[in-house]
Length: 431
Image (cartoon, rainbow, N blue to C red; front, side, top):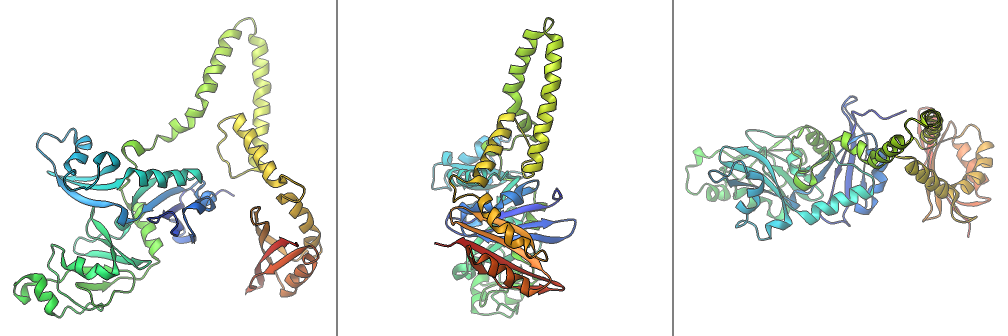
């Protein structure tokens, strides 16, 4: 059964390729998390390929890698604003503007709100996602996915760092060690408080207001969704705790921010679909022109027969490989079928999934009460993993005994929910 197109996948990238990557699939219809997890690094994005199929994908980039700022727009440059923006920021930035992707978030009178990120980083992220077969719908800073309030900041802690959203277009990622100093540096008046939101004044608060009368100071309100930090400035108000990735995913879906502009602007879906067929259409047109008249009857007969063959081959292809929804060409179909056969069959007599399944089937046939829920084959590690369920614990023990004749068997913890016992089994060949 196909996944609902209303579901979407949110991926939160890290600053460096070797750092963990968090992800979550959310269903707006069911209003619940379908799946979530964390990859060890950027190189494991291909594990999300199936989740990305038939779903919109929102990619969050670290706020620490993006400069969110404002710049004054000179008179008369409104029409060429997109091309002028990088040079308006030249004095503020330490890098060559040609190496930076500058995206206009919002124009407000003579002020432009922009996001700035290095081209090489955007290219590296999109390249890794593309190699994994993941098509990105939105690319946006993670801090701008926090809830937006007109009278306060919003904040959440992620892996020891604080994501803070200041406004519609401003936000930061702050290390816990300098969070207090950053808050004291804000333009809004701040009264120092403890993490419980006590707005009683302290010497720190007196310094922050620079001589203003104590009773005129309004502490900066910060709404937080994870436990508040201790001994930092501001009035911290606890909101309903939520899974941070869920909070960010909902914010990403609702946000209009998308850094896929300029060189990274997405092509319309219909143009992408037509592009693989251009050469085929041109060749077919030439053939048809050459055969018009004298061979019209023969051509019609052959086209009808080809359509039947193509329809049948595509039907078989979709039945065998349901994860591939689009078939741009018959050569693409053939390559995918050959690739799948090679993967399943393996390069030698001792490799390939088919040989494992042939040896696994007799043991499973002897325990019909036990059913396999999912299965994953890792050829590089020479192991087969599967999740099974049954009504009794003893069925797993029987299976382990039968499989131990040919494999090294590692059985995970068994869990019983209702009348069903579930557990994971890992098989490796005996050395």
